[in-house]
Image (cartoon, rainbow, N blue to C red; front, top):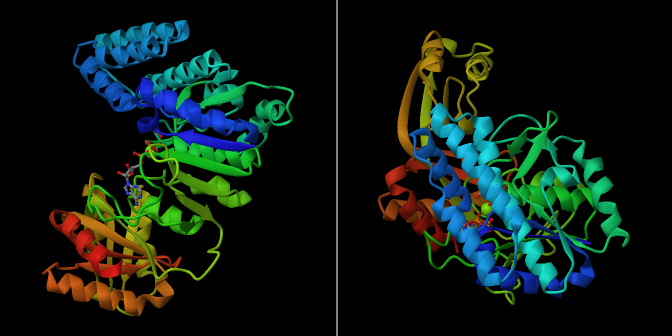
Length: 440
Ligand code: ADP
Ligand code: ASP
Ligand code: MG
């Protein structure tokens, strides 16, 4: 058995759906479980429709037209999609009357994208003579906590998913399962989502729980690339990446994988292949536990914009125990998560998401230390063999200095697979370009 996940761009229109159906049919003998995202930009369009509804206007034209036109072009009848579109209109009308949108309602609303795309694909495959069955994630046991918009899957899924899919794996059920990515239900039966890009996590969870031979995530790029191709056009695919590297890459801003997607497959050692649905002959990238040959010096470069850089200094605490403990307790109290850190005995530099309100934290920290906050910073991360950091740093800093880019902080992750530097957001693209040129 394998899992095949197709992202939004892979199923963006009728032509793409036909193409993907062909890829699925080609893998039929491997018993694929298919995981789909919403078609194209449907999730964004649903979120836009929600914002408009809050202001009093109900308009789902874009979403409706795309799905009805696609069904028509594929020559399939999908009453189930029409029903969902009606339900969606009701929901938006409700939002427009209340002028209010909770996180819980937002999750219910965006769930329609994935629910429509699986119905479309199952109907099309069946019409083509390949029996397929669509499932909303909860119908195959996807249960999560109630942290709307960024829910965590519960450990129950390790048993509930096989309970629902073992029939397919052992051959008693012949229809190819087409499952919604991104969504789940909590224990109370309320719809949740796993965070933007969450279909990757749905796929790796199903693959790990089912002990699949392989998890494939099909995208619109030739695998995991050395950096974001929208920033550096020379970015090229990395043939082999470890789970750890892929995780750091995703956590430090590479959109290509959901930040938590490596957790389930890493537990079982299930290999993940990242493939291009627009270029099926390209080998893509494989994500595994350990490099098969020598570990490359540098794997990839990623970036996260709009972070805040916080400097905390206290000469009073020189030599006193508990300075770090005291400072981090304040972050815990205000529930502020820290990304990159560098410390000395009396000073700490760290970064947090630039959108977080820091007022309370600043007041509390001021009691023991001087604190300054600089906004509009960016983290640029080099995913590399950090045990050989001297050579990497020498090359990187020579190039940055030559281009006049000022690095405001540097940190080497404890996992020894990343080195992060902090620069101004205005310089982030240039920094990535300069580093890519110097290191690849
Ligand atoms: P999908 O919807 O199929 O999951 P995404 O749009 O979420 O696809 O992710 C793929 C996109 O991620 C690519 O089109 C590319 O623009 C972007 N990207 C950013 N960094 C990288 C990287 N290092 N490798 C590959 N793609 C990247
Ligand atoms: N459709 C969702 C999103 O756009 C989930 C995904 O594509 O993985 O974020
Ligand atoms: Mg994605």
